Image (cartoon, rainbow, N blue to C red; front, side, top):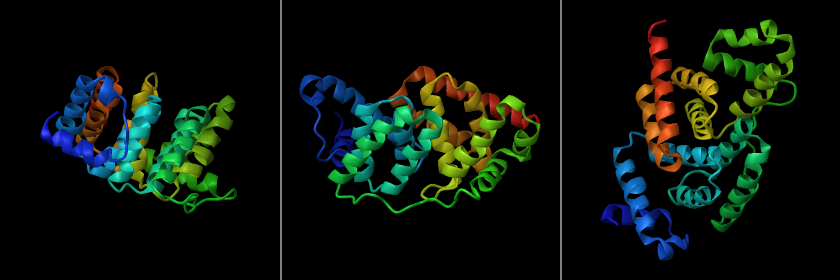
Length: 252
């Protein structure tokens, strides 16, 4: 393991034990040199953004073991526990309760190991009376005025899910404190690219990222940071979609 990777591994994973260091030292060296040195050195993202992306794609691909390792690392870098919780909460809109429940419980155990008192401070800014209105406003802010037409001009059989997208997906999650709009669109992009099979939604949220201020270069940086955790095929697919959406928006 090169010196830079070794130093970063010691800092990030202090107190984390891995049997792979004994059984598969070559594998650990390969992974450490690449993910914790080569990729990090070329990243244009802040350390906070790096950790948010990594945790998000590990949720998206259901990488529980590495999620737990990287959560220790994220907390060791000083990532706010509230930001971690917001990543998991928002992931529920894109992955479903069935895939976030165990991650939330794992995160709680790790936070307690780090001396973090739970529950954390509430972050909600909406209630039952205004969640639809504020959620729809957030959709329009990020994706344009046409989003409002989904409620009045969308297919009749989709009226329930279109309303839920406004009041639940955006009204319950995107309006919360703890992460800003750029971060929320960035992590959603990560949830989608890590799952695979969500290309249409990834196109929409690529445009949403552009609208939130995450440009093409930054999204490429997001994919590069995520690549060690999800592999090349889904990373290359995501880059193709970034290029496609960028070109389409340039020609409008």
